[in-house]
Length: 177
Image (cartoon, rainbow, N blue to C red; front, side, top):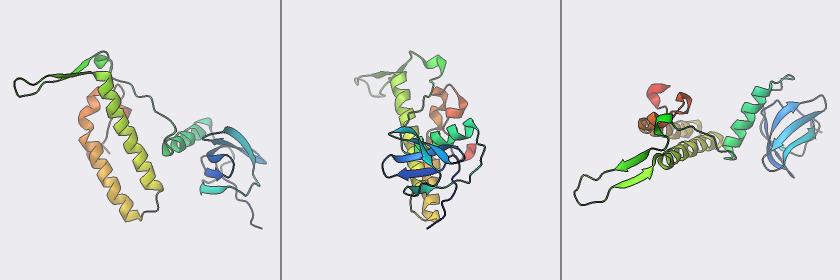
């Protein structure tokens, strides 16, 4: 029989009963695994019936922050969480007004929060697409080509960064690293 490998915090697994999950803590004889549907479960280190999706090197002492970041990465990959993104204070309760250049056509107005929500959804869906490309069976060359398109899309959306409260929520194209 195969010797079971020791998985590190952040390793992704697929359990036959609990589905997709991520290892968040290591014990001497077990793992704490957070599953998308079933939450936190303890699984013995010698368990062999799950599929290892991504194995990370085991570090016996993992910080809570590392485990939290790994869990967030997994949940983003499977689109299981919505990230809270703050609208800049100056735009709260504002209105987006689209004034046509042609006389006689009606003006379109919408709460800026609604417009902001649509922009954030575009960003979040691009992130999910990026994760799915990275996890796909495409060749490295194909992945790089698709990533270049996504980077250009982010660059095209940088005009909307003025709406975000925090700089870390901004779109970043090729010029911004």
